Structure formats: structure tokens, C-alpha cells
Length: 82
Image (cartoon, rainbow, N blue to C red; front, side, top):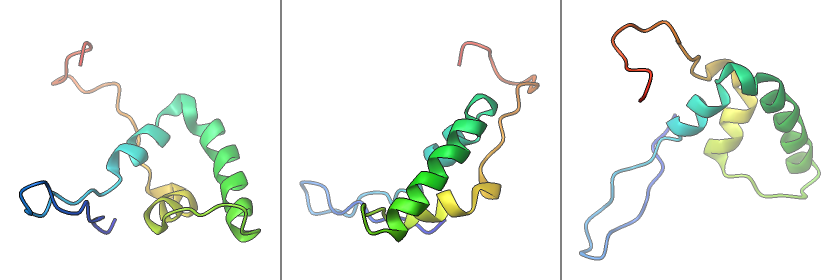
């Protein structure tokens, strides 16, 4: 994904760019796969019908669902409480 500018902080320093990875991770959860697919189709239709404005980075995630990060529940180096 392309970095998304977050503007400047109150000291005028550029903030760290956002890349939408949290959206990719959330939509990649196995329990959300069906819901993510249904919702993405509705969002694509709504954008095509000009009913909503969807930021380009989010629309790219919706259209390219194959790029979603899949969850790995078998990682032994992670705590189950994280």
C-alpha cells in the first residue's frame, strides 16, 4: 500500500504515514471473510453509483481482497493473550 499522509503535529513536524495495514489484518480474519466479501461488494457498487466517497487506499483494499493478511493461529512465538 502507498503511505497515507497524516499531516503535521502541533509542532509542525510531519506525522508518520499510515498504510492501512490494520484494515488488511482485520478483514483477513477467518471469521470475517464472508462479511468482508459481502460488504466490499456493496461498497464497490455504492462508489460506482456515486453514493459514497471512499478513500483510494481503502477502495484499493476492497478491490484487491487477495492482498489481505491471513491470520496464523499456530504461531508458537506469540502469547494467546496478546
